[in-house]
Amino acid sequence: MPTDPRKRQKKLERKAADRKEKKHLIVRESSVSLATRFALATPFPILHSCIDDSNWTNGIGQATLSRVLPNGQIALALFLVDRYCLGVKSSIAVIVPKATYDTRYSPTKPGSPKSRPYPPEAVRKYVEGAVAYALDSGLLPDADYEVAKLLFGDIDPTASSEVFEYGKDGKPLYINGPNESMQRVREICATLTRTRGSEGFHFGLMGPGGPL
Image (cartoon, rainbow, N blue to C red):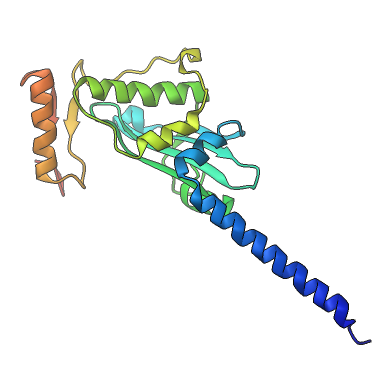
């Protein structure tokens, strides 16, 4: 039976209107800053709130907070925390489809560092405590931290009874990372010397094959 041309035209028009609306939605979303989108995401349910075990065994590891948005996407704040010295070394602040989150960012995906859930209040307390400890030495968190931290929203870190320790044996312990240039290493050591004194911190230099 032939298709009614009027019905077909209406169907095509509906599809065109849907595509146009989706395009407008994409444009609207892209015109809103990530910081604003993170701030608006804070009322939504938390998906993961955890800290890697390597934070306790090696002094450095990830802390994760993610939320499920009404459209099914995931807002993620991922912090690489150096609790011995540098505070938040790097941050990731993204909003991604659930499939991308599951395969790339989820703390439960295969191959992820071993971690365990912590209450959101404890995760915020740990991350902000590390930042404060580093600031006492004149060391700033990475630039993306300012956006990533917005996902905490009104989570109250004082509600956590967890006790976190920073530094090593009572002093900052700076061990350079694989991506830090010697210029960056010298800058950090100079800052620590200025703020803590030459005997006020520990230092270990790592080369490609291990300690130097």
